[in-house]
Length: 112
Image 1: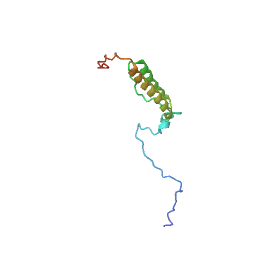
Image 2 (image 1 turned 120 degrees about the vertical axis):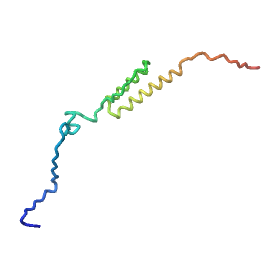
Image 3 (image 1 turned 45 degrees about the vertical axis):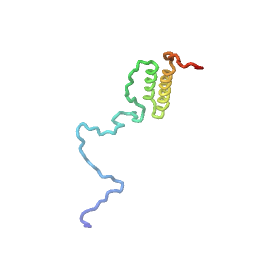
Image 4 (image 1 turned 90 degrees about the vertical axis):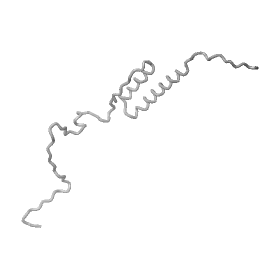
């Protein structure tokens, strides 16, 4: 090593300085900072899934119940989904329990 040129050594914890120009219009803030103070990306947020009315008041009420999941943390969704599923299953079961047309008379005769 030449003693005429002073040698300086960077400290071990120093990181290299990188300088680059950022194109105009590019947001350099982190997502949390860009969204504003108090923004929590993990907070519950509506999914924006449209619920189209079916014309059946009971079923439409159950579908609207799905909106409750929009305001719950993920671990709370299961309770809402199970409740809606149970209600829809009960509504389908009720369709099967409705009395239908009378059965045709039997042509089978005993003792013949």
